[in-house]
Image (cartoon, rainbow, N blue to C red):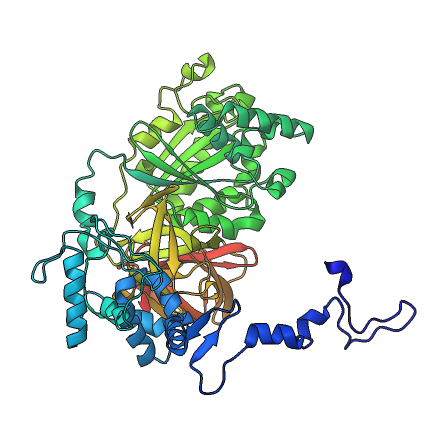
Length: 639
């Protein structure tokens, strides 16, 4: 058929091309139709005739045309019906759209705020009362009693589906013009049974009865680059049965082809092509596994200096950190010196609120399981941990071998190790940890770590719930923009659930909001308890080992949760004592290393913060400059 299309404005190959010429268009697209074809499609009756013929020559009355035009669905109304999924509240949606001039967001907020109270139906006219009685008789429903069958309200020209064995009208059956209004206005039958409303779920009561469940802990794996973090955790997942033999064999075969046979276990977590090609972790890899007593959400953070912002994003979601250090000669020293990432990672996890630190001394098989080497590393690190703020009871050392899998899931049977080490394996140490306390009773807060569009579910956001809980069907707000949305569904660990609580990594499917309104670092909260937004705040910080003193107007990169914002230290208020917290100097001219100070920070754009006393996760900040961390602390006052 396309061979016979006549292309207009054809230009010979030797002639010149012009910008205003349009190619590849058929005459059928924009030329007038032939008189016979136009008469067949657009034929109208005489001016006084009420009958109109459609394209197939079937006569229709003008009343039918008017009814079809009335039943055409408005785009804004269609969008609200998709979000609310409520056919029986269409009148409320129409009224809201008329009240707010077809503004879907404002109309949606109005309907959600008033949806608990459904207005009574308007009084029926005499003609409608007769139709109502006839339909109730047909459906076997008494006027003064609630219907026992559930019938889904249907659109016009669609056969009704009833649970009771009654005869339903077919599309060919005729009905009076007013029957559509009766079906919309009068509550003839109850809507189809739906899932319980948010207010019908007692989340706190359910959590109190969860004593038999395994408590959840979020564990971040940190350490210097090439310390063996991904290899250690990948081998651990293989030992726990979370990786099939087929997948492991595939990783070994492909890594050997690239000349990186030792990276087979690391590829369990390093799945992207760039990570496998470069041999380093770039993004935070996340997975979940269960032990005998715990459910562990694992966050494998990158160790390279270039990806410290990604490491901060992963460590900010954890309560426990596993610091992996290289025990080989020169390997430990390279990570622990001034340019290594071992020091900076320890400082960052402490500043981000991690209370428990497990030090996995890796590659012990390369030093022949030497107790002397293990004690040397433990002594060097213990003094540094104490200066950062970790107590001895909060740090646990364990010798492991990520490549051979010794002392990971079970106690090692290596004679050279068992001769001097009598402690637990890495998994046994995780099992022995006390479960962290969650802020279930505080307002809902969730920091977005990823925004994406699911092919089946639609617009989705991922993140960790920092406090409170959220239930499916709850209207929430994305801050600092303040755009409202609705939680359509919730997914936790690839399973659909009705609610999610503090501490869980979840995916929320949202409706009624544009994807451009959502960004990484936005805080999701409920409309009646929004998180505070500001461009200026005061914080008590600890200054780290810096080369240049901090002065007024010092530029920094402000890190909190997954957000990285440019800011300046606009004011140096006072210097405090490390031990007592008392003010030792007011209005200092500069800040040097290892000093505790109260400063004022000013950002270019509004950010979401909470006071540290109200929210520990949203009340911590980190300041970096020139690729290194210069200070970290807690929010004291929001101005």
